[in-house]
Amino acid sequence: MAGRKISPNLALDQLVAQRIARGESIVHLGFGESRLPVFPPLVRQLTAGADRNAYGPVVGDPATREAVAGYFSRRRLPTEANQVIVAPGSKPLLMALQLVVDGGTLVALPSWVTYAPQARLAGKNVRGVPIPKSCGGVPDPAALRETIRAARALGQAPRILILTSPDNPTGTHAPPEVIRELCAIAEEEDLLIVSDEIYRDILHEPGADLLSPAEVAPRRTVVITGLSKNLALGGWRIGAARFPAGGWGERIHADVAAVASEIWSTLAGPMQSVARYAFAEPPEIRERLAADAALHGTVAGAMHRIMVDAGATCRPPTGAFYVYPDFAPLRGPLAEQGVIDGASLQRHLLAELGIAVLSGHHFGDRPDALRFRAATSMLYGATGQQQRQTQDAADPLAVPHVAEALAQVERALAKLPR
Image (cartoon, rainbow, N blue to C red; front, side, top):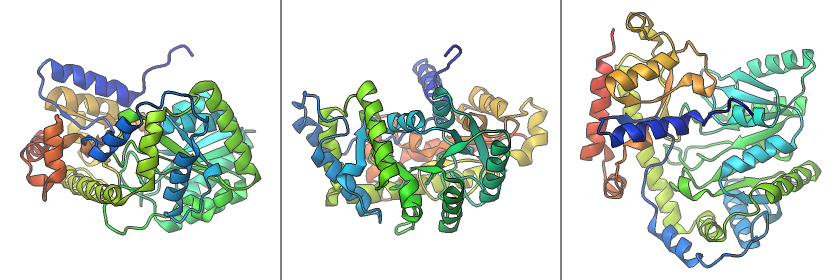
């Protein structure tokens, strides 16, 4: 365990907070937090459950798991409560899966900064597979086949395939035909699919369709979700997993529950009260989800236009609250200023232009690529009052602090050499 470091997104967030506290002017786009106020009905649920101080069932109380099962069932994933485990965030569930499923792990490149480190903590071999041109969060199917063949030729045994849709860091979601092809490969190669769908409720276009791998390969897909992103409850740590029906799913469910009993014991009682209410999705929750998804889409779309106007290529965002620009078109002029890779681009943007982003190499991207993730949700305001103003605005781009932050990014990127 020697030499372990804090996850880069958390480390950057702490660094930026320190510099802002010293009075520096920084536009913080480096942390994947939904910076919105807590929805008042959720506060009431937390308060009502505050006296729940006893240990509950390891997998979660029956009513909470029923609510989660209903959430999945409404998304074309018929689910029984006994297929569900709730936990203090999605991270422990992802880590537990790495611990209980044998074999190596396959991740998309780029992908969320935690997947590969968790697999390595579990002693696994990790192989990254480049994403297709159309989207992020999933490996290119042809490249996945080749990666599996190469791994098996070396005596390795890939077993877990992690998919994310919508995706962090690219802010896109995979089209159904790609999901179907990846599920076919998983069937052929006997892989367990871990489908991280924590951004599922943040699709920018109303009615946009998202195909879950669990619809295509239901007996070999574990679905992960939580309330950190869609309802801005990152600090409350509420996650849930849906396990496949049938023997394999039941065994994995039991093994994850055993790990849970030794690590987190149970999701805190007050948080289960919140989870039961939120996953049941009464009308006010559904309205909040839809409004926030529209907000995220509007601001991410504006940031995408700024990046493209600055000379980058960038996939148009379709979900979550990220853009992932590539400044390869400016490689020559940037090199003259000492910017030759993702790490130096991140440093340059922060030190010279006051823009905090997270370089693509932290997500497993090629170190020499001039790519980074910008989290647009960080623009909604530094205070609860500002965040509510952004959330309630008919046009969030006209809110003064949002407009100024976007303008500051635009002015800063205009200073990049051409």
